[in-house]
Image (cartoon, rainbow, N blue to C red; front, side, top):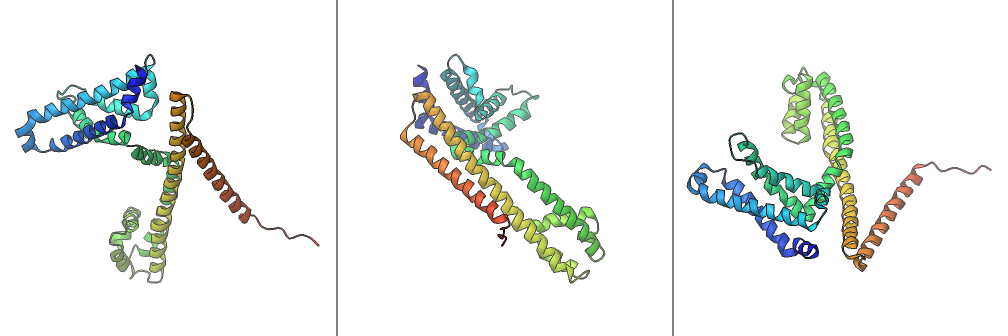
Length: 284
């Protein structure tokens, strides 16, 4: 029985049906923001909301039944916990105390697309995995902001008090510059203060802040995506082995390809370390 339910839950048509219901839930959340539509079709919208909620509850119930006598295994997956939390919030009573939470939960139901689409799971997982490394890049960016802010106040504070009159104004100006929003106007306003230092200050900050920092963030995310690829492939392979008792040829080839890519990365890092070491000249 559990095997049949497991095949049903992981069937392609079942996943597509749940995906369609999630999209319908998102459309309903958007329609409910219009007072005119709510006044005219309020009963129909509420009925459709109840139908969508019933389908979500039915889906979770099926996935719990699949685990048999160990339903708590369902909550080992973080995405399942996320789905369960959203559905639980939608089941709150619709009185004044929980009305705001209920409206928020209805809007958040569209986030279930992340759990329904594996590619979105890959992207979100890579972003979450990269938060730690991004924190250090953000710290470096904050340090650069502070240094350039202090220098900007000393160089251009008298000539352009609007943008560099205080450290707070300078930091806000630097944030505007790093987004490339009308930075040329700030450049012209500061030229009267230190015409020689202005080009160096502005060009160096834009290059460091916009180009280098952006590339660092992109590099961190790409590295996290490659790690997520490997984790998802290993998880799928382990799930297949657990369910069937044997690994397929495709699983073995995918694992071998991952090992080759890992060896290539190790070889590249080893070459970089060898290049950084100074070469020793043999003594005569």
